[in-house]
Length: 297
Image 1 (cartoon, one colour):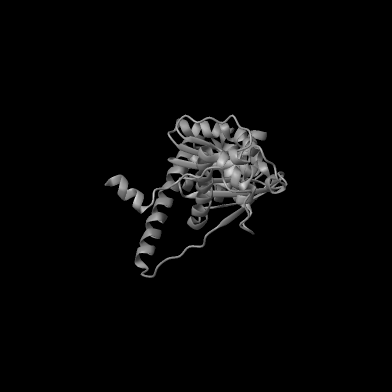
Image 2 (cartoon, one colour; image 1 turned 120 degrees about the horizontal axis):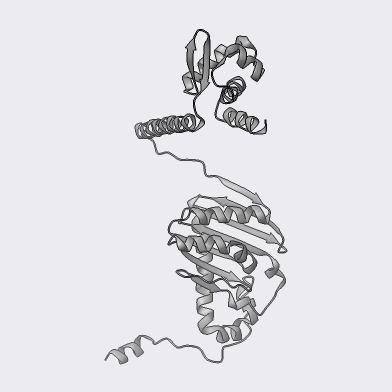
C-alpha cells in the first residue's frame, strides 16, 4: 500500500536497509508473524529474515514474542521514532563535545572557509529572505522595492510579533507599515526615472549575522548571493544605513539638494565628475570659531 511504501522510504532515509524497512512494515500489519510468514508478506528471502530481524531488535524496532516457533512483533512507531531521536541527539551532543575538545587542543588560530550561496530567480530569493526573517531574533535591515515588500509583508509582521526590530528602506510605492521598527522611503528618486534606476535590488541583514544581496537586471532577471561572512554582512548593512542617512537628509533639505543636484539627485549619483545643477538659493550657515566665541562670551 502507498502508506507502507512511504514508511519504507522514510526508514531507509533514517539508515534502515531495504530488508529491515520492509520487514518492519510487514510486522506492523502482521503481529506475531514467523520468519516464514514474514518472507511471504514482505518478499524478503527467508535466509535474510533472521539477519534483518536481529538488526531490528538491536535498533529497538522489533521484539521476539516466543521461541516455539519464533514469532516477532514491531515496536510501536511512536516509541521507535522517539528512541531514534533520543539516540541521535545523544550522538550529536557527543560529537559536539569531541569537536570542542579537538579545537581547544589545537594551538594554532583556526580559519574556516566562508561560503557564498548563489541564488537565482525571484521566488527562490524571496523564500530565502523569508527564512532569514523567520529565524531573526533581534533586528532585520531590509532594502527593497514595494512589490518585494508586499510579498514579504506577512513574514515581517510575524517577526514584529516576536519583538524583532525591522528597519526598512523602501523604494517605489508601498503600503508597508511597522509597529516597532522604521520605514524610510526613498523619496529622492520617487519623482524621477532614469535608465539605471530600472535595475532593482534586494538587500537584507538579519541579526548582524546573515545577509543577502540580489539584483534584477532590467527589473526581472534576479540573481543573488547569500552569506554569513561578516565582511559581506557589514558591507550590506552599511549600504542600507547610508541610503537611510541620505534620505533622512533629503526629507529635511530636499528642495535645496535638488536645486544643486537636480531632480532625483541625478548629479549627486554621477561620480565621474563634480557637476552640479547650480548654487542653492540659500545655504544653511554653520557658526565659525569666532561666531561661537561671541555666542559663548
